[in-house]
Length: 145
Image (cartoon, rainbow, N blue to C red):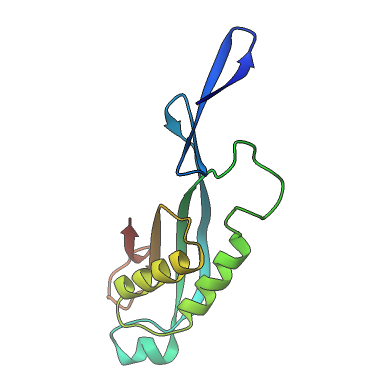
């Protein structure tokens, strides 16, 4: 354990865990990268018409990962590049699925394969105009891990 001065009357205890994860006063530091309400046209749905014509979807992704350094730099090294995250969302959404749950699960798998430092997260896939014969803002599936 190392003690780093925080102010003239306080100190922060920094403990290295697994050689790269840091804690301050016993609390693990993490970042969460958020992509909120990314709109994309895709062809997901159980009905043939949905798969042929498509629909407008909103995808929200929150990805949490440990702070790997005691000093955060202004570099993409060691972080999750949200431009890459949006590319992964586009590619994954381009492959049709019947169920929103399946889309959310495929998104999670693609994101964690590319960014193995992800420790937890959330993926929400919302269909903005589901063919239900009812007025609603969306129908959605949310996966948390």
